[in-house]
Image (cartoon, rainbow, N blue to C red; front, side, top):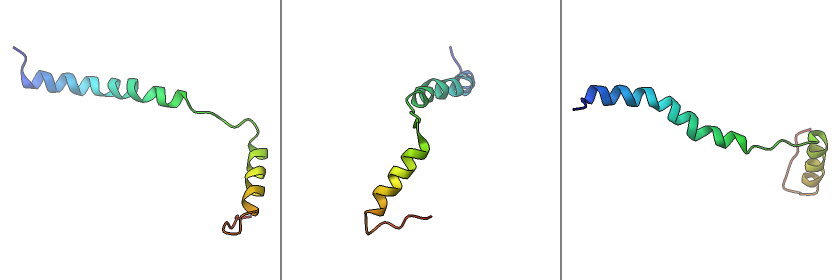
Length: 57
């Protein structure tokens, strides 16, 4: 019969592996912007048109 102590020990050892397996795929879907400077300038020009937005220069 499996004791409670052995179950706790097993869960303690498997938990980091479980986190790794479940959280790793999330980072694989991240995308990077190819032209960061162009994107920032485009964002700034779009925000300048909006009267409610104060862009921090």
